[in-house]
Every structure is written in structure tokens, then in C-alpha cells.
Image (cartoon, rainbow, N blue to C red; front, side, top):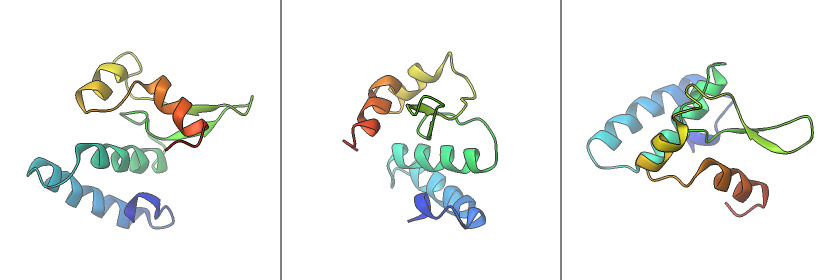
Amino acid sequence: MAQHDDHRPDFQRQCLELLAAAVTAGGASPQRGALLEDRVLVAQGQPQVFGTQLTQAPDRSLVPHPLRSPDDVEALRASWGFEPLETYVRQVAAGIR
């Protein structure tokens, strides 16, 4: 619910804090936490960490919103159980997700 409640950014930030605690305690999926973290960062105009938030490029293709550490994103994604960024973008573009 919080993931798509973009019109209430304060609520999303509060949920992120709760979700981070749940992930740390082993009660929630790290991927869910990463998705919400990226969503909150992008909403704040900051670079995302995991590359989960996409936008449309001028050529209408999907691309990640700016990344905090583009050179490290693939290793980070792998360590958190995400597929490679290129695969993720392709799946979202194809409507597989």
C-alpha cells in the first residue's frame, strides 16, 4: 500500500522506517524495503540506491531514475536478491512484473 501512496510522502517515509525495522528483524523482505527506499528517495529528488524506480527516456524507453552509485548498483542488487538491472528494466517494459 505505501509503495504506491505517492500523494502522501510523509506516510511513505513513516512506512519506510517501520519496514526497515521489520527487514532488520527478519520479518519483511529486503526487496520490499529496497523498493520503498528508492521510491521515497526519488520522490525527494534524490538519487535512488537500487534502481527499482524507472522513468521514460526521450525515446520512450524505460530507464532507471538517477542512481546514487551507478558503478556499484549491480553488485548491490545481486547482494539484495534482485536480478540484474537490465533484466529488471526489460521485464517491466514487457509488463512481466
